[in-house]
Amino acid sequence: QVNLVESGGGVVQPGRSLRLSCTASGFTFTSFDLHWVRQAPGKGLEWVSFVSSDRGHEKYADSVKGRFTISRDNSMNTLYLQMNSLRPEDTAVYYCAKSGMGRFGVPRPYFDWWGQGTLVTVSS
Amino acid sequence: DIVLTQSPGTLSLSPGERATLSCRASQTVSSSYLAWYQQIPGQAPRFLIYGASNRASGIPDRFSGSGSGTDFTLTISRLEPEDFAVYYCQQYGSSPITFGQGTRLEIK
Image (cartoon, rainbow over all chains, first blue to last red; front, side):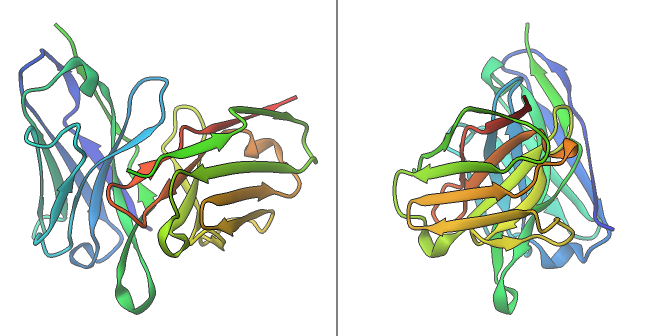
């Protein structure tokens, strides 16, 4: 059974930093791309960032580019999101999500498993 | 960016009825790379459909997806009490990945 557990959320002042973690189990961690998706209170889902299975590729939403950094430790089955220069509009539940797999083992960025989320509140 | 517009915003139906949810894209979704998710308030999203019409593992067959190009539909054939939730579509054919704003399915 796939399990994704996020941690590291909390209350932080604008301009400060926070690092989120997501510990994975129940699948071959090194074979799958991983993503962060966030949801502001009462709002819809917003894709944030992606890292490829081999850590060779990363992408970011324009709203976080230059401030957030995604990384993964394949020896620890853990995904990270380093969030710098936080803004009030970054307040959200942050989910880590496992990417799907298409034919012939090609990764497809739909999200077949999600963690329970961790709440980040940016407020003075 | 591809903008996904879901309609209606809220759908009020009774258990046993049929639900039809729409997702319209501002541009063609490449290779029908469209997914659907269900979210019960306070919970993480649940994966339902990929490739516009393929049910995820363990998803009941009352859920079905259809469509191509710019128009996609999620149909729930006979609503069960546990189906009342918010539903999101997502396109993954073009970067950046984008979601629709959601349709709330509520009990009438």
